[in-house]
Image (cartoon, rainbow, N blue to C red; front, side, top):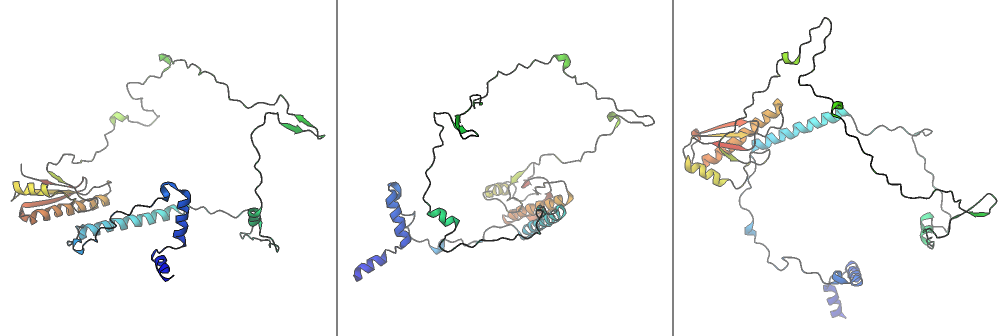
Length: 308
């Protein structure tokens, strides 16, 4: 008996496991078969020496502070917008005839009764009636109680009739309105001189720099000055050709609007990206005096402009 108890205790089977095994055996099939062991069950534990020994590469403190400032500004803008728009939940008045308080009355259940829910559970199920239409015509009772068949003039449910699509006549060319070649004349008012659009000056257009910057492009993590991985060969190639410079680095801040505040943030982010590339180049031997950095609002990533 002692050995039997030890064998039973080593199985570590409780009532839940026993019930689960019984259900699987009743269902049969693939669910009743023994499951395969999980992958790597018999593999040795990993060595502690495989843990990383170097700190992960993260954005600079200036870039993190800039991102935190942008998030704080967006949060405050959201607070002000919600306060200006008001709550979205309407003020629903109470129904008429009530004082705002709902009084609930609960009837006491007599002794020996279980309530409506328990009584319905204990009641035998009612036989399901056949809802199919029988072959005999339906019957109904008149005022005297006599049963008579349904009147024959009752409308029968049927599919609607199918009609062909009516032919649409073509519009003659003379009925189509013609587009004039010149714009319509300006309205005239007595005592007022209304100039035409031809005499108005064109709207001033911003003087954007749309020229394509020639240089080696570098990709950064969105909204950060952290360089994406796998770009070391491009840096090594620049150093091999121009080890002493001069080099011009232009960083772009991904400006999403024309507001002055957003462009200011974008220029600062572009400068941080350009300084990050300058740090990588100086660490590889390029003198700092031969590197010029610049930040631009519109654009993505950064570019290193090399001598022609």
